[in-house]
Image (cartoon, rainbow, N blue to C red):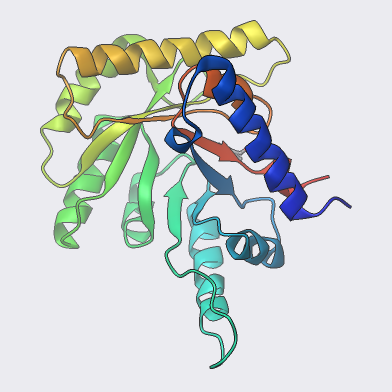
Length: 240
Ligand SMILES: *Cc1c(COP(=O)(O)O)cnc(C)c1O
């Protein structure tokens, strides 16, 4: 079995190469390590390696893993302490009745795709005196079964979300379809980037609209080439 440290190095090497190909600075690209396929020991290992941004796609799992880690951080006197500043990313589809559970844990919700969900986050956040960061999930692949607002409706939804005081819209998120056809994948990422640039240009969104979350284990190199600022990677680090 290949060690996790070697796999994270390999992924980081690929990110650096992809950045070099298109003249980007690797510090512009944040790696969120998706822990849904990992054992708790493997999660602790990536934290020891210095990674601070972790992601889960299910609320139940987000609560479980973040709670289990609390014990890991409560180490006896004298033992080396791992970094405590873990940032949890909610990257999966979010039901409105689960919002209140996610808000106290998550630093960024990647998957806002309806006004009703945004309004629920806004209302719950106000009660908790929070102002969470969120991304608008856009369906760039036009697959009807996929979550995400259609590209043509994204700008209007962003305008509506911008009026809500207790959340902060900081960018877009998208998922490419699972296919070996790299042209299809790249086209989705280009669509997301164009929408991102357009929203910024037309001042529909504020200065803090800076994040483009796209790219998973199978397609992160393409995502980096097309401007991703956040990658969500799990299996490339935890499986095989
Ligand atoms: C699981 C998941 C990922 C990570 O996928 P891998 O192929 O394991 O890298 C990224 N984004 C979302 C929304 C996911 O559910």
